[in-house]
Image 1: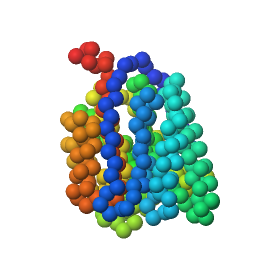
Image 2: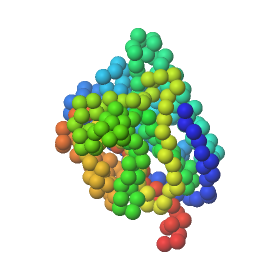
Image 3: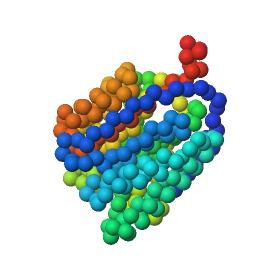
Image 4: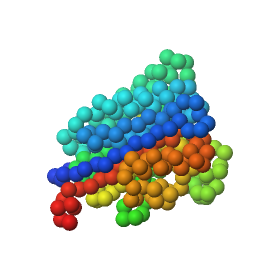
Length: 257
């Protein structure tokens, strides 16, 4: 379950420059990634159907379709509550689909950026990631829900070793896996010029964090998305790859300037 803190919005006018790019990659025969960018609702999200399980594309589409009905929130807590409601509905439907198909799991990751006025919240389950680029530095706001990351956290693997570990892609959390899905939440205050990158692991399998920053920092959002997908493909494109870039600009900052 998602635990909502008291996110009280402050009045502000803002613009959200958004780019989206997705590609099946060079190995897979269909795209199991889905995504949504809805600035009016304050929602940007990527879902990645779980590789190796039946109907990964159905799973990710089920998640995104549920989020399409999120509507216009009245406050930051309302936005978070609406998101949780839609995700719980999607999780219930994924469990139903699995039973209907006689499958053990029909699952998907989800990584979402929620924005209301000057506040943001990142909510995720699985290994799709959310980055923030601020003041020329990139930080990963999400933490991968994988066996490899757990071993890194316990000091049993280095970050470098984890990238080559045979079970590096095995998830420990995802939608559709259990009746009560588990999420993590990271929240903060927006600053004018912040750039968020939301992506499936098809990007991060081939592109390092600093390369993401270099491609995104000064480029238009759509051009940055296209360039990152092209780079992942150039390096093998072993998985579906999806990238959303959102650049936040406060009109207050523009007025002060």
